Length: 372
Image 1 (tube, helix red, strand yellow):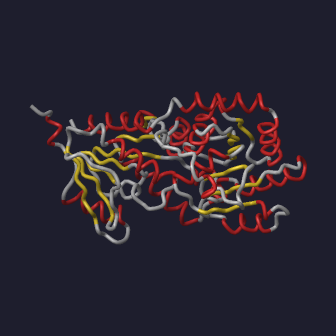
Image 2 (cartoon, rainbow, N blue to C red):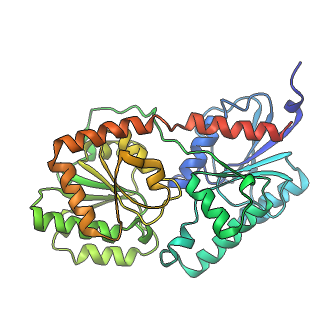
Image 3 (tube, helix red, strand yellow):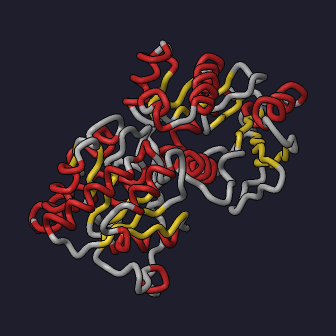
């Protein structure tokens, strides 16, 4: 006899998971949904998607796709109408925006309050919308998943969210990526040959790209490093400042912008980097730290927010406002083999604590409890 919960309906907002170019929150949504298929077996699951979105992995028979074709304000109008006319008993929103109309048992993941700590990195309208959206999502949700203890503390301090509503569930990283040693030069062509320093992420103010460029210039000037700098990712808020810093650099011919890169390209860049630079001003979690560590690359991370929680002593933490500290640390990691080997070893140990499987399993328990 099947458990009673098999007659209950769990709805999942998949609108951010199946975009063609995924960054942090989209990658989280994708990986969590993909791994939830292994844990939500005896319940009915409805995956809500936008028009023209498709799922690129197999879904169990108890999972169904519902396309919501509303063209604009998809969450607040389209998904709300779906919840009004065909409600789910439990709704899971992995990307922090709960619809106005929602079931009582709604679970939402909050990824961080970057816009509160780095307001200069966001437009006024973006800050206004995110503050409204996340405050209401926290108010409306029965359970809030925070991706780090730091985010949980921020929610309590800034928005007065009751601490008992918040469950910390760490993100994971793609540990199952099959890396091929072949065709390095298809990615690392003649222009971007080794050695190089690497950053991967959105090229925006919050990520401290200008600080990374300044640190790179110091390495070239003071230490005469032969390294190049690879800044991989699409441009975000503050792009003009970043482009100006590159254009005005004496070493602009050695700064490479491959743009948005695929997963395969990402891992090839990581495998060949000497140092991964991630001295950002604020992180809700910081998946790139784990990806670099799993690839055996030493990481220089910002000594703030969740970066120091996720990396702890397995990365070298620096003041992101000090380009000199970033440069000196990168220099030590390249020139001091014992230090470099120690950090790489600690990185390998650190990543063992994180996985998408574990993340999805913990979320599945919350969803199934709500469906009983």
